[in-house]
Image (cartoon, rainbow over all chains, first blue to last red; front, side):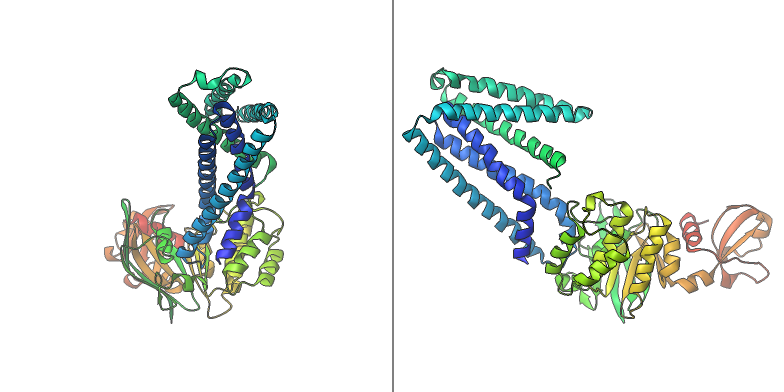
Length: 209
Length: 279
């Protein structure tokens, strides 16, 4: 029974399971490049990945709950399966982030990594913004959603501006430690929100779920 | 033998309250739960399923306490709500895979044969199905593990007459086995007239009566006449009245009314309306 539940959860959450760390790795690169502060980038990226996945999973579970509620499945087993699934995912993310972190460190020490990494990071960010702009246009007839998109876009622009010091200025001199932390937290929040919107966009457009 | 027994069930849900609900469903019979929207029919079914925790009372299904033996009992229960409660990204094939791992007696062959019989696509996702298709799929899912008791909560509401008729046919087929029983809640009383053996009338969280359908239809009579003629009918015989084409219509207890007054056979819907509106 537990195996069936875990298979069901994995099958229905596979897109999110793979895409979330990808998006947060992008955030990780941004923070790492900007502040050269790998622990901050690593821990907040990991926490945000697990956090956003948990939220999406619980939303998905809510949609399946009514089906499970009337089945001969002991409630205890359902709760256990939920926790075991989230533990698995957290474990996968910890391993994944550690591998990525080790790779980044390796590249940093072995090669001139920062040049292409900057380009890749900035390109991905621009893609994110374009996707969100499409989202904005797509939902335009729905004024409520459109109005929610405006602060998102503003935040996106702010984020790009925030990354501009990458191209030359010594950032550590520009910001105090407190400012760095505040910016990192807002960036994590922004990336979470961007990712959430993108998942919704992909779900609707590509009929993934 | 009683398949389902509800004794003095009470449950408070916000301002609404189920009060001392008692009834039994005998093996091999269909009980209809009727009442207005908000009368408490769905709450009773949710209490039976232990989805709502009862405040007090006793509920036994197949002679076992409904809460202590919840998982065991569910193997023999088929449950249909007014909507199909499965994730809408799944197809019937996906559902078969899930259900066969959950129900010990899940019969895939029977499931797919019912899908074919009712023209339900096994490849379509639930989200592209019409409401009628979804409800037929809900009943097919509820039947394919060969349950002994079906609990149906407004399964036919919002469906066109043809789909409703198909669903009732399916239920009549289920009742061909004498060990099977159904508790069917609905405010569409014509559906219950077709298949119910007994009727329990719920009003404002209380049981107004439980009677066999035949005795219910025989015990009550519908009298139509002028207001002057109506004064000759004993007041204790009158259950309810409403203005009619000839002046007034009365729902009366046949046993208290002289044969001099011609009485028509009321429908369950008329009995329900008169009971609710009263005098």
